[in-house]
Image (cartoon, rainbow, N blue to C red):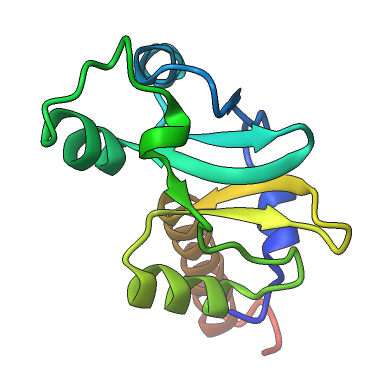
Length: 149
């Protein structure tokens, strides 16, 4: 649980960041999200994070507000000031943040303020399952007399 989130990012199958400018339309963002089977896009101003646009934003701020996705820009409906973490944040800290903040995705921001990754609750769960599986295997091996603790 003290593993830094940077370690988790380095093990992800895909490190591609899907981004759009704040002037992109909701329809463009939804197309990108559907094409890549992702639940959010990072909204950028140049190289800096301006916000995040998620499935929840589509439901509450677009569909729920009866807005036209072809005429609505991300700037109008994105989540401003998303919860972020540095790459040094631990898995435990990330788990606490997603629980308390009720978010599923956290942009990872380096010391210069640039986005270096995106960690999701699914990424954390995968890491936890793998860690528990490895621990169980180690204990099985130890009980069988093949290793020291």
